[in-house]
Length: 119
Image: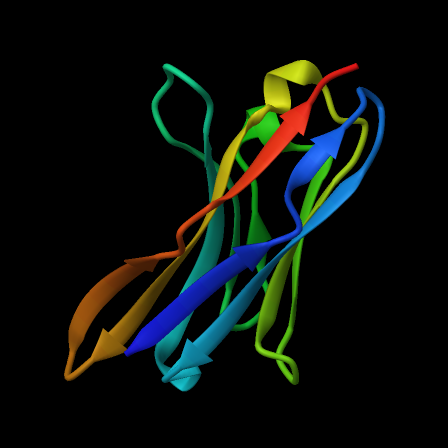
């Protein structure tokens, strides 16, 4: 199995930066890709960024430019660097991973970390 624990959320002012971390544990070698999603109050969960097992990254067009996903394989951590934060970035940010067990693709979510952007 795979477990995900996010950290790094908090209250920041508009224009500031924040880096979120996702600690990955368990059968990390089974992971195919890890992603960050976010869910703002009253809105649906949306994709922020994806990083594959090989380190390739993808971003929806709406997330390109201010968000950067990266990972440290030695530490089993995935990061989301967020720059020039805006009030509309306020949301719970979730770490997500897809992994394979016995040819079955399974999905796991972390508990989320709250990011509030406000002056």
